[in-house]
Amino acid sequence: MKQILIMLATMLILACLASEVAACPNCKNAVAQSGGESMSAGFAWSIALLLGVPASIIAGWIIALRRMLRHGWLQNP
Image 1: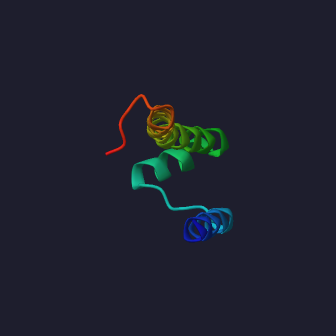
Image 2 (image 1 turned 60 degrees about the vertical axis):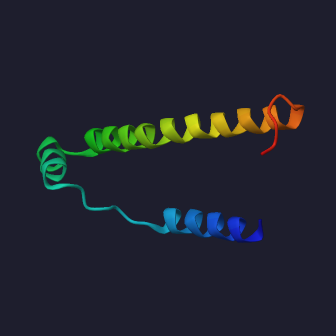
């Protein structure tokens, strides 16, 4: 458990310290031509949603399975 917490803390620190990442050439050119801020915010939100939805679905399944195991609705293998 301690190793997981250390890994999560390290990932959080690295995410906070990261600077802007170079986008693919088409996205980079589109943002440069449009003037940028609103389009780059749109790209950031779309990426966050695309990564967040599968993660929340997986987390929901894990929580449901743990509850089922805890209440005895499933047998522990």
